[in-house]
Image (cartoon, rainbow, N blue to C red):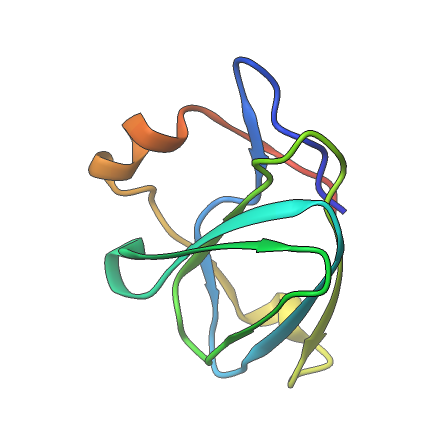
Length: 106
């Protein structure tokens, strides 16, 4: 679950990747903007009923851009997936577009 973005902050996890395993994400409710790929240059907006596959070792940044909580179901190929999370810096070009990030739930 990720709370909706406010006027001053958007709720997100920092940019990151899951080393050696992939993720499958189904959006149950709300809206999320996902930047992904090398340099986070690819972009997609997902809503309820949408699905995204994040290949292993792919940088990604989910940001709740909606006005309600975003709830999703996430499946990963590694039961100890938190061991392989690698946090990444937010590219400077993207910082001005997404603004300050506040860590969301989940």
